[in-house]
Length: 103
Length: 164
Image (cartoon, rainbow over all chains, first blue to last red; front, side):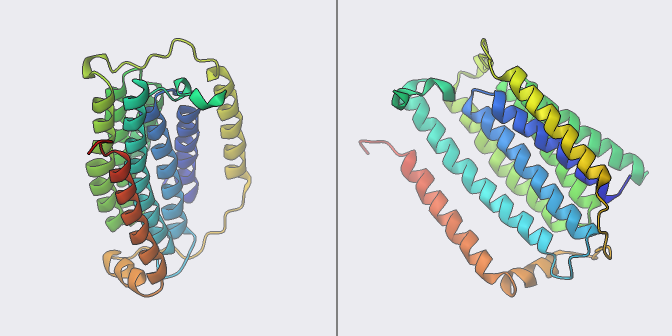
């Protein structure tokens, strides 16, 4: 059970579910949750390959996963600021109702 | 015991991430996301990544999840945080796309002869990550800190009052 393939399988399931959430949700916050799932599955891949792939003593997979976490934190902050502005201007957070510029 | 724990954590991650994308109540989805994030932290422990497991719990569960719940509460009345999804034209299409992507990735996973090098199982990763960040990955570290600063300023600028 504790093999590279099992970790990659969990990561595939999380990625597919996150992509499904991003494609079907209309609420901006729910889309953000799907993006977090996708980022976590990528992180799981990095760390699993670092353990099983023999990448050397500098732990590049761990460092890359750390940078992904930093990026996810800044992305969440900016996206929530955008969502709050969207709510102030349109009184909705459904991303398909903010189509003023689509002509 | 360890095998049982791994299977349990994997089941927790998969079940709660399924709940994240299907729950009709946004607060339920946020709670399910917390289960997923804790489960991924547990998987990090199984992968000998103790520092990353702690970071995952502190930043994701303690930071990003709180931000998400703030986002839910600031934009919706908490009692009626049900997602209004009366018409969902792209749900069947998304299901088909994700199903074929899942089948393709899974068959790729089982047909690829993965190169398995020497397993890395350090006693503690904190020292190694700290040394790596300040020697080999110093430039990346600085770029990440500038990114954090810019994102912080940008978020504060975006959410300020217009007349303030």
